[in-house]
Length: 470
Image (tube, rainbow, N blue to C red; front, side, top):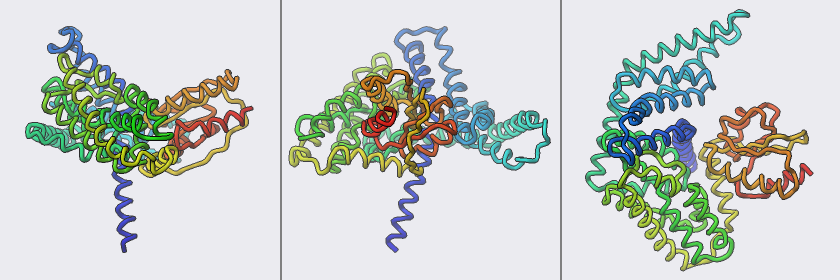
C-alpha cells in the first residue's frame, strides 16, 4: 500500500514538473525579445535613464502584441511545428484584442491550444486529401481553424484569463504590501534545486511582474528567483572551508554562477551536503526581505541570472537596492553554509557523483527516455550542443569541446550550441542531456548521431569522441 502511495506521489510530481517545463519552454527561447523590451523601457520611458517620448512609443506595442504573439507562436510550435505555431499565433491574437493587460497567460493557453487543434485536424484528414489539393487544404484549414479558435479566445477565453490575471496580480500585491513576500523563499529555493526554477520564474513570476511593471515601472517578482546571492554564499563557503575537489572547483563555479548566470552549477554542492538547503533558504529569505524593505525591482526578466543581467535590468535610481538584496542574500547563505561545512569539511560524496545525481534528477523531472548513442564514423562538419534553452549549459559544453578539438589538432569541425527544439538540420553530431534525447531526435536530422551525456562539464565523453575521430 505504501509503495502504491509513493508511486502515485512520484507520478504527480513528474506531471507538475513536466507542466512547469512546458510553460517555461514557451518563454525561454523568447528571452531576447523580453530583454529588448526591458532595455527600451528602462531607457526611454519618462522615469527612464534617458527619457525619450519618440522611442518610448515602442514600449506599449511590444508588451501588448509582440511578446504575447511570440509566446503563442512558440507554444503552438512545440505542439505541432511551424504549422501549429502559425495557428497558435492566430489564436493568441484573440486574447490580445480587447484585453487591458498584457496577455502572457492567455498566450500560454491559446498558443498550445491552436497547435493542438490543427494537429488533430491533420490527423483526421491524413490520407484523405486528393493529390494536388494538399497546399489548398493546408492553407485554408489553418486559416479557418485559426480564425475559429481566435474568435473563441476573444469572446470566451480572454475575459476568463483577464480575471485570473487581475486576481493573481492583486493577491501578489497584497502579499507584498503585508511584507510576507520574503516567506516565498521557503518554496523557491528548494524548488530551484529540483529544477523547477524556470517553471516558477517564467511561468508564474514573469507574467505577474510584467503586469506590475505596466503600473509601477518595476517589479520585485523579477528578483525572487534569479537572485544569485544564495548560491554565491554556498560556493564561497566551499571555497574557504571545504577540502578536496569541492574546494578546488568552487572558484571556477563562482565565475560560472555569479558572472555567467548559470545557477545549475551550484546545485551539486548542495546535494553533497543536503543540510545546505537551510543555507539557500536563509539567503533567499534575507535577500527577499531586503528587496521588500528597499522597494527594489527590475524592469524586465534578467536571464540568465547573472549579476550583470540584474544590473542591466535595474531602473534608474534602483541599482543600489538590487545590489543590497544580492549582498545580504550572499552573506546570510555564507554564514549558515560555513557553519555546516566547518563541522564536517570532508564531503559525504564525490563532486562528480553529486553532479551525476543532479543530471539524473533533471532527467527524472523531464520524464524523457534515455538513449546511449554510438559515434558515427562518417565525415563530421558540424557538432551541436543542445540544452533546453540553448543558452547556458550547452554553451559551456561547446566551449570545452572546441578547446579539446583544438588541442587535438582537429580544426575542420564547426561546434555550435542550440535549443534542443531548434537543432540545425546540418548537424552531424548532437551532444545533449540524457533527459532531452527524445526531443533532440525529433528536432535533428534523421541521420544525425545523438550522444547522450549526464553533465556538459564532464570531459569523459568528449575525450572518447575525439579518440574515435582519431
